[in-house]
Image (cartoon, rainbow, N blue to C red; front, side):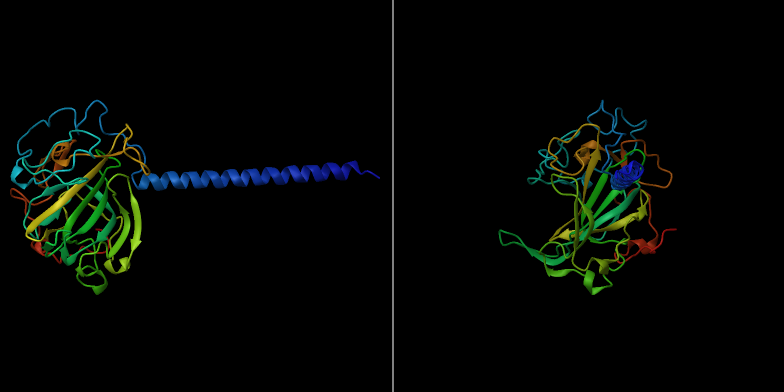
Length: 319
């Protein structure tokens, strides 16, 4: 005999089960989406607001005072390849110093071992240790030493949300606690690329390349460590007889990068020497939007004596 009451109860049970599954799935999707959004925000992948749409350069007008601005042209070396610059002025760097194809950075010509400073408040998000005793070029030239430690940072400045800063051709960094102390994070004999790699790195065209290579734990990188403008992030290295520190910047903008294939399409390579204004750091210096600190000590600014030592290390925990 057909039992209508049991049939109705079973139907209600099935409907309730389906409803519960739908709720669980929706909750999981919400949590996953929220986590993904928060992860992207923490890595600077979201479209940023802060670069004026009306201007192709960093700011819409000159700084209130040009005193000390761009005052060290002798330190500005070869700039980025204009073919990959997709925001702001394309030309820059020293006159008569053409960049090689796909060059992303501006070379600051400083002596070997010069402390390299943070141009803006920023957080360490990746590194690649490629230091070697020597490198043999394709034409047979031997470059010795070959300093090529690279650090990647995310801007912590409200003036530059989402901006990514890379610096390379460093010989050492106080943010890598194990470098120079742990043989696992020492330089190799011949350059063959990265010996250790951790976190996020900038590729030539796209936004990020995430890698973990080699015994990266031996470097004891202070990942997510905040460094303030003017603080030491590393020490200038050498490629043979050429000493320098190379800086590259990807700036967030409301317009999409037409060259981006994957990652954050709102990040653009800029020409550092002409996109930003530069001035020397001092504790009382004023830095309007668009003005970055030269990444080396200049004028009367002196670091603590121990920070001129290329083996200087920060404490593992922030003050």
